[in-house]
Image 1 (cartoon, rainbow, N blue to C red):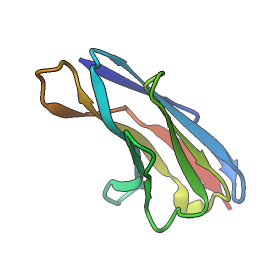
Image 2 (image 1 turned 120 degrees about the horizontal axis):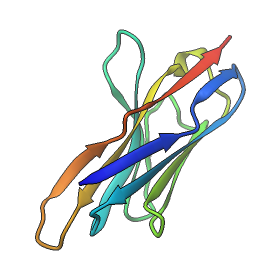
Image 3 (image 1 turned 45 degrees about the vertical axis):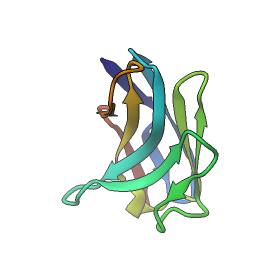
Image 4 (image 1 turned 60 degrees about the horizontal axis):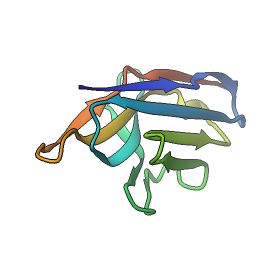
Length: 121
């Protein structure tokens, strides 16, 4: 089993910054990708940013230029630096990891419990 624990959410004024962290622990052979998703009230969960094991990154158009995702492979941790926050960024942010637990295992999706980010206008 793999556990993902997020931290760093909270209340911030528009234009402010927050940094989210997510640490993976448990039976981990390799993490193929780590990323962040968010779900606003009444809306579907959407991709925010993802970083595969290499250096490439992908961002939702709505956060490009404002958010930066980074990953520490040695610590099995992913970060999301969020700058110039807007009220429409308000959501529960979920960490995701695609994990191979043993050399003979298939990759499997794991999710954190989520951390709330509230941006006031």
